[in-house]
Amino acid sequence: MNYTDIINRRKFLKYFGCCTCGLMFSSCTTVPITERRQLKIIPESTLNRQAAQIYEKVKGKETLSDDLDQLNEIKEIGHNIEEAVSEYFHQNNIADPTANFKWEYILVDNKKIKNAWCMPGGKIAVYSGILEVTKNKNGLSAVMGHEIAHAVAKHSVERASRSMAINLGTQIADIVSGGKISGASRAAGIDVAGMLAQFGIMNPFNRKQESEADYLGLIFTSLAGFDIRETTKVWERMKETNKGKEPPEWMSTHPSTTRRIQQISEWMPEIIFKYPPIKKL
Ligand SMILES: [Zn+2]
Image (cartoon, rainbow, N blue to C red):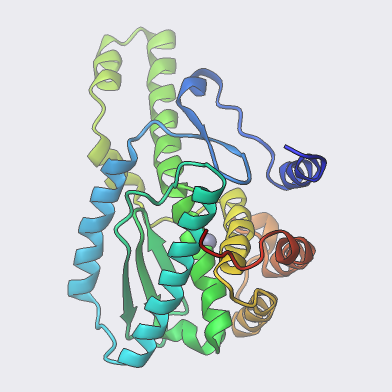
């Protein structure tokens, strides 16, 4: 770690803080690049399997677009980001967090939904509604980079683990206070699948995870050779689209769009400099 790395890390932690995992410390892992500690007690493979099943259901239920040119652009952007991410971790001797991903892309024909997502394991969906906001290839890469970053940083695994920990914690408190033996057996035989269904893997991410996905998304998109200066423009357009519909930041689990644009603008020059388009060695 050189001096600039320390500065960057400090700068980053100023934004993201550090989770205190307490009793669960041994189950903590670290998000690559940002080095934020996260709780991971649910196996990633479990979540990936679950996500793949849900993805199949989505494919069956939604109307998939027949715009092949657009789908091909999505796939091309995706492949570029996939390769850049793997190459980056390879060159830096860090285990590739996407090594067991099975990347897949769909374009859902729904103009009303201005959204895209990437489920654990690299299952991606873009809704045609968001294309009015992304406008061009760089804009679309910004959105896809952000969604892919959620998956690379294993945000769903973290969220599911936290839900499970909260539930376990409640049961332990139950035992300590009331001496309920039944609670102990429930804690031991906890049903992971039921838990995931209860909290849902499609719930929104929290504010810290959103900012982290913004940060990592910029890095991955830049490494993949896209012009990340379009990112703030996409968010400006998104803000215009959502005019008046956004809750105040203090009420929301998400950073406000204004705050997002501000953070992204602060990070951008350094990321362009530090993470230029990556070339295969
Ligand atoms: Zn997000």
